[in-house]
Length: 103
Image (tube, one colour):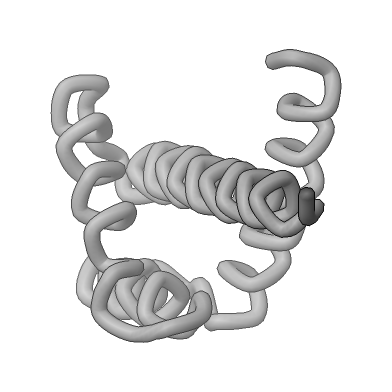
């Protein structure tokens, strides 16, 4: 009997965990950005969902970074893409730690 099904199962599990981690990270980015934009709690949740859904436009994080950066610019906030990239990197580490520790 081959180990192939076991490897395929692990690969599928790893892919699912990566997807969940990315969604969680993007939601946290959206909630952070909503706070910077001065949104209410209810509006922040809705905004965070738009940040999560913006990630399905193209592979990678550029679509998410662009969305948040453009929203900041539209509100007249002085936040460039480097700030959003730093926050995204910080949240990536935070989410990875949460998942590794059962959070």
